[in-house]
Image (cartoon, rainbow, N blue to C red):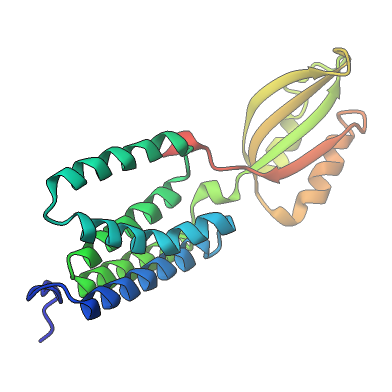
Length: 222
């Protein structure tokens, strides 16, 4: 029976074990990148980082092994990376932690652990995208209204008919104060009724500009 916790470098690191660990690290990075891109928009730079990061981490840890001075220096260098990064989505942070863990496991020669954990977590990421999460159907509605319109409650009847949820997120003036731009977060009862919903709003806002977009995931939801 295969023991996941048996290190291929238990009898000493060799060129062959290093190349095997490097190949497994790249495979784990590729699987994680594919799972992160499944039904989600990610940049090519982020994909490349996920693929290559496990190999980089594995190489650094393998070189630092047993050298305290070098380990402290590397820790200080890695700590600087935090200040060059921006807040991301929770899904992205899980992917980064996963490739880091895979790289560490490969550095210790535990390639079976790295592959098993990567496959299981990637399957979890893919399955989570298919969950009926309410936020995935949220829309951002931007409505422009004239200053003469008392917008509080002006669209309640339309929202009650077409939307299952709505919340006024922001109000700002435009065109020297002659217009108001309202931003709502909402969810339609039936997305096939989008055109009818917009037509109903146009009758209330004087046929001014209306825009509907997918609501972006907020970083504070992490």
